[in-house]
Image (cartoon, rainbow, N blue to C red; front, side, top):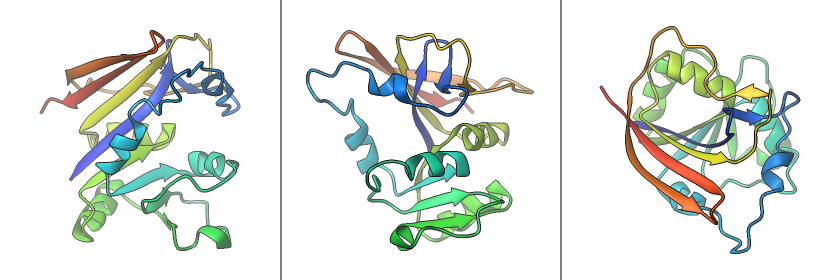
Length: 176
């Protein structure tokens, strides 16, 4: 199984403002109306695992944006909105066991999303590839992508792409 992180950060490494806001991403000029490779990435994954905070943010969007199964990793959520019951599932427990169970169900490529979930996966050394798009803004504070680490994890640079002379997307693979 391969676990991917695909995310945007500010130059100072934040994925959201302190209150979870993403307005700074919506302000990006996009003359080509590009998705910056997101659709291509989504073709390569089988399912998405996200945390409660990310899930609650996604629920504020005008429509459900995923066409893949979504697993919400949460110890506090007990129920999903009726309109997405067939699109998402709440899971909880040890993430290594959950990954093994999803693998046994045929999921081989997972998109891991949400600051706390990403940090938990990194803590357990369960992230295989990271694709980070850096946005040229310094937020100063907010939700950190990586947080504090007890020990370093080494990644190897795979490639970097520049979009609209603004965004820098870099792809890294975990060195084992």
